[in-house]
Picture 1 (cartoon, rainbow, N blue to C red):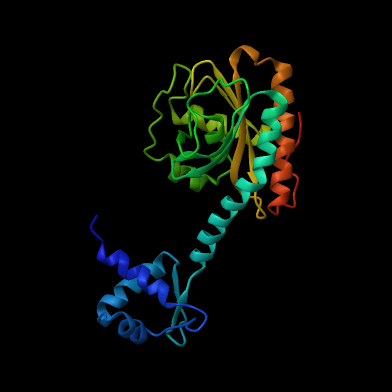
Picture 2 (tube, one colour):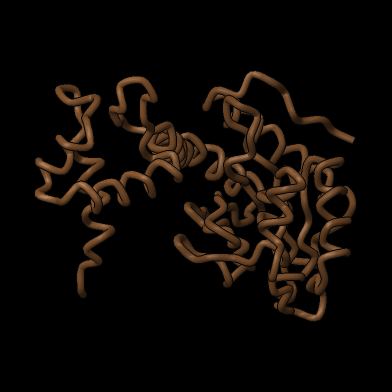
Length: 258
């Protein structure tokens, strides 16, 4: 595989900053990397626009930007959340016999980052590392429902509401109505929209900024989806999600029961 030189150079710039060199002038960066000033300036401008680099307007020196903290926290949250959530997923599966999942958003798809199978192995679609559409899955609905209008607009522009089953939502208008209901209820349902014969309920996990960063869900056969079962599953999932959210720093109780 060929190396993209401009990407490599940009990454090399980021690697120059450490505890001994928290700030650098453009001449120092050029010299350390053996690049001319014009090329270095173009690379810095690109990194700066994306907030990976910032510049002090008085001294002209460059330093690492806040985007790196954001990306680092993003990764650490998901490394931590999987360890924290594992016990809850296992308990939920053990107590119900159903399959549970931990899912995060990656672009315009959900990604399964953990799964615990119960004895009732009804769902064949999911596996760790596999992606799932945000429009046909309960987990996908939860992951995007709490986003701002601007974020939703960007996310759904050009989005393909392709049918996974005959029950799948196929247009933006219906989907937006469903997302509003998800926010009101605090959970989402996938009624055979992603896999025939399988129902799934998902609830959000909030971080210390009250941002939804993941979701846990439970899947089970449609034949067992009675109103009583539904309410019981929702309460179990919300209790588990509240505990997970609290352990990753969420101070506000987002979970209510209807």
